Amino acid sequence: MPEGPVLTLNPDFFMYQAYAAQIKRSIQFVDASDDLRFDLQKILAKIDEVRPSFFIMSNPHNPTGNQFNLNFLKAISTRVKSIGSYFVIDEAYLDYGHTYQVALESHYYSYAHIVKSIWFSRFTLRCHCES
Picture 1 (tube, helix red, strand yellow):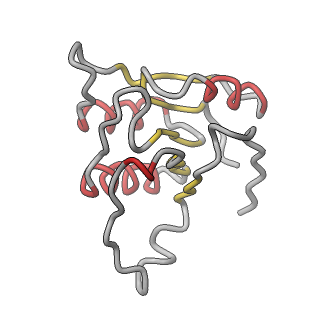
Picture 2: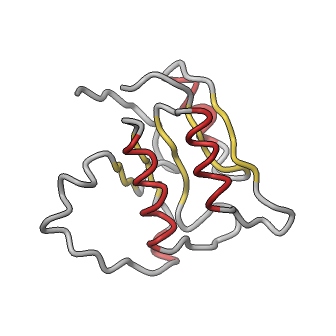
């Protein structure tokens, strides 16, 4: 697993802090605006500043229920990949959102740094990554 802290949104699922502690990583946050929205440029700048081992976020977002659009997620994915990190998308509540239409055939290796899960709210994160 790459060096560096865990980066997440604030607010987001509270257990991400415990998951970071389990793998002995500090955690840093990208704060929401007063209306609980997240500015993409602020997230990208924080990724550059912090250089996290992984960036984790819920989608749809917990607690607002807002679902991030595909371009928003792709921008984060591209930035995280550029620093050799991982992008973890917690889709525990995707049943309450909509699915994305993404053609995977040529993108499989392009997005190998993305980890999607629907179980983070139900189980503990155990992570071992090899390069």
